[in-house]
Image 1: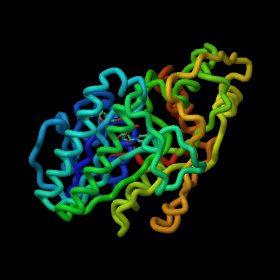
Image 2 (image 1 turned 30 degrees about the vertical axis):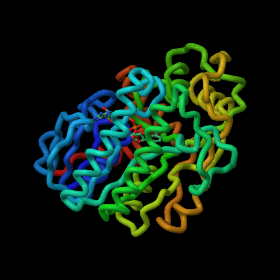
Image 3 (image 1 turned 135 degrees about the vertical axis):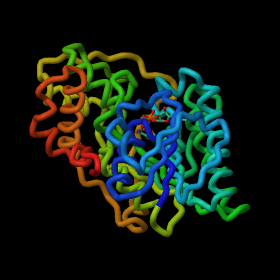
Length: 331
Ligand SMILES: NC(=O)c1ccc[n+]([C@@H]2O[C@H](COP(=O)([O-])OP(=O)(O)OC[C@H]3O[C@@H](n4cnc5c(N)ncnc54)[C@H](O)[C@@H]3O)[C@@H](O)[C@H]2O)c1
């Protein structure tokens, strides 16, 4: 198939492209490089089935494709709050453009939505029929309300224009290629511990999150795209950890003597977040396979290699990582 991945130069998108290329598809990556980088895709540059287009999804584009994975949108608060108007334009106009394209060429369209559509949830764990508790005027709204509109657009294009849609609600995902400065909790802790500076916890650390390793997430997205259910489907790891537990796990792995510093909680930070993945199990036969301890080992090995360009690339954790097995280009 010819497959378009918007946001394909980013963290999740580039891992998805690795999988699609290894399965022998023709892949077009479309990215404006706001948070994505060519280095994530370097290994595919000379491949005849790969094409990279610098393009902003807020502008229309004409392409012939069979499937569209629509991931373009900054995902970390630091980046999506830097230019909130641009973030909401990306979510609304960008999604409209990509759904318009899907309609024209009869491509199947998968939206990378988010657990943020549940806001600060009043039900726990979150099932897909929970409608959320979102602040329409808060500093996260450009992202979470933007994604809610994107979901609405997808379902309206389905009802009105028969576009084949798939909607994935992605929960916190981590792994190699996360940006050092993106302010997400796993990358924050790993980078701070590797630099030997205190790990910053916002609030008292009792708020919970669940963490899905990138290869598990990509598998879930591909099953959803190629299955019969349109969703929405939660894709995430239901193992729940407090932020303090995560900090301690990273501390143990990198430097047990590193300090932890507490800072005030930002506005609208959700207290608890954990997916109910019953639907993903039943509809997609999917569940995560990489436990946090193992995923952290892979992630730390990757950060260590990037930050210090050291022998860490050949560490045993790095070489076992399911994502690293996939970096060899096709001949
Ligand atoms: N990582 C997570 O934990 C998580 C959780 C929930 C949802 N998601 C969703 O998954 C998708 C990918 O997230 P990620 O973690 O890989 O983030 P990322 O920031 O690494 O990747 C986003 C990519 O989109 C590109 N992009 C941003 N705006 C664009 C625009 N207007 N036009 C074209 N390209 C644009 C960026 O340059 C980048 O390559 C996003 O839609 C995000 O909302 C991610």
